[in-house]
Length: 232
View 1 (cartoon, rainbow, N blue to C red):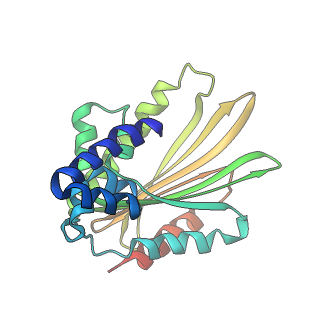
View 2: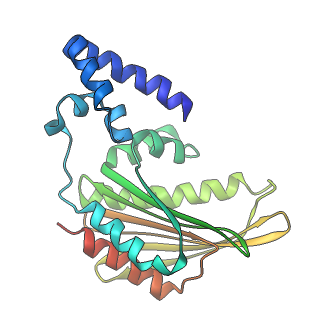
């Protein structure tokens, strides 16, 4: 967003100027940061070796998602899901819970696929969150489930209420978590969505499908394939 560029970008420029002076600023504008995470964490830009490393093959996991959905002809983009985005997404939770979600994660990346079809816009999104440890990965999932319930309550009396919601526990292939099947009413139409959040060890996987049909068994298999591809 524009505000992100002005606020976070200015903070990065100030940090680089303080650390390296004019030579650092010239380097910054010649080879600018390649991700939001480097903008929000100037220390990582100044010293790449200081950036926490998860040990997981995050891009390989996102590759698996893209391969599995290749037949849907989606326009694909990838991006860091940094702390500012986690905070924005989790804003319906109490501040302490938002902090807990942010502090659970070492690295997050998201892949977004979308297309316009006969039934409107369709989305497929997958995020991989490498957490500090398995306990915090489990916490991230629990907080995500609380966030989903909070958002359902927020839209209850809006123009886009969730008119049906069902959750199914997932505990197989070394993964634990849940699948939420929701129906959203918008403009007289009912839009089906599925979200799965699972973790294996300290790696959490989040998949959301909007207007894309997939059986739960297939969705679980997709999550397992992503986590396997991302394994160290």
